[in-house]
Length: 248
Ligand code: FES
Image (cartoon, rainbow, N blue to C red; front, top):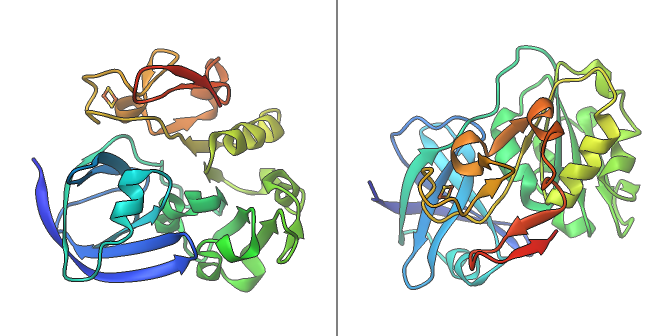
């Protein structure tokens, strides 16, 4: 059922990323997503960056719908339905979160004192939510080299021993997910990856989100190493909303 929800606060996190806060008395688990309807533009799947009573979606302007959505001001209303999809598994041990670009948004609800973050972005001013981690649990990686380690996300993994963590959670552009997967797949680690695909229904009916026989909206968006191991489309191709398959 579509809900009509009032935005209570708008925070600009980076030059291209905005967080929209709202009260919504529905249980949402970290990693699950909602479908946000932008009138005149369509629906976009969004993970929540805050899952308590006060909830939050963190939006990066990619396409027309998200460009419109980030213009939403406090006091205005949005439409959403959900939550949908499989959440991240919980663990009581220490966690490593690896987030590229706006991917750290869906990992943010997992942050606690036992959490280390590798936060990666192209430019220093697009590092998202790195302040949420304790200073000694934060590894920043930028391609422009203006903050943290100069390089890409896999260079940040060199700064830790992935096998020291009870669970690794990864979210970001799919090329980044694949690079992380390739780097850690031979190690003795547990890891989960949040995957993005074009979504229309969000509930397993339209098949627009299919990957190697999985439906990302129902079987994901969170997948573990074992599931990814058999996927030939992971990191290689995806379907556009038009149905055309393109290279990633
Ligand atoms: S979005 Fe329709 S089946 Fe997944």
